[in-house]
Length: 88
Image (cartoon, rainbow, N blue to C red; front, side, top):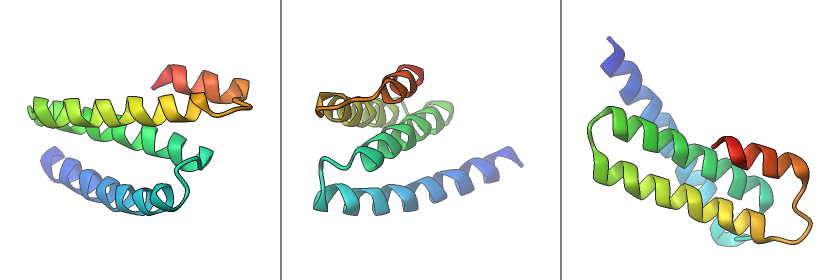
């Protein structure tokens, strides 16, 4: 069933979130981790939205935006980062 696939996907994303949180706690300016975390929270936002959990979706949207803002505020932002950020 799709519901089982969504639950499994969300569980995998939560594990990735835990790992990225550790990386960002140690190095809050880690470009790769900020980018990956923004993508991850976008995915979690979509899963929460499809599961009719709007408050949770909004929380993930805010975290994605926060990570993108942090990434794009770092000196030396590359065109590829800007292009990728615009698709999230």
